[in-house]
Image (cartoon, rainbow, N blue to C red; front, top):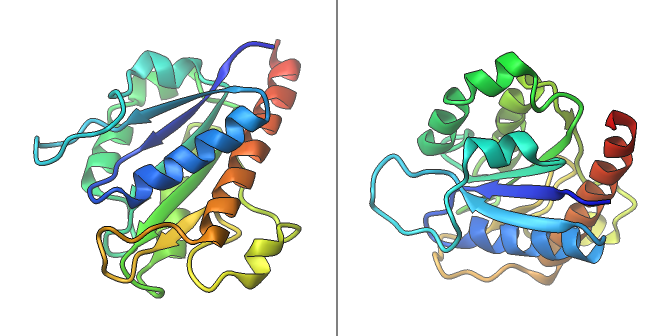
Length: 192
């Protein structure tokens, strides 16, 4: 079965991009193409290591992982502006019944990861997507001392821009990618 999971993100310091790359590994391990793309920045203050997403790529994906850093318990303005530009896809119902999940990174353990993941879910729900997270059957969810939530993969940098993902954070991101890819293929069979 052909198709792809779109891993769409915004990252300023690289942690969200690192999570995106780990999610892509999980998607590929499940035998599905992973397309990693960036949200268009509102300014040119940083460069993205992946291509900028097109509306067509979003419309044609079989599943979506959406990532943003934490900004006061919410997604960055660039991500919000991107979703505000997707009204034409919403009117056509292009994303209805496709699986989606969210991922994030913050500078501190109580920096708003879960609030951000929940707020990032709102545009996906308005598009009619089916949300998935990380089940507690994943052992790392029980033992993590950094990022990782049932709402989706996360990272805690500890205010260090070059902070590496912990082993638990990496494993949770990979398992999330596998789960999202598997669900995308199962649901695609019912849409065809």
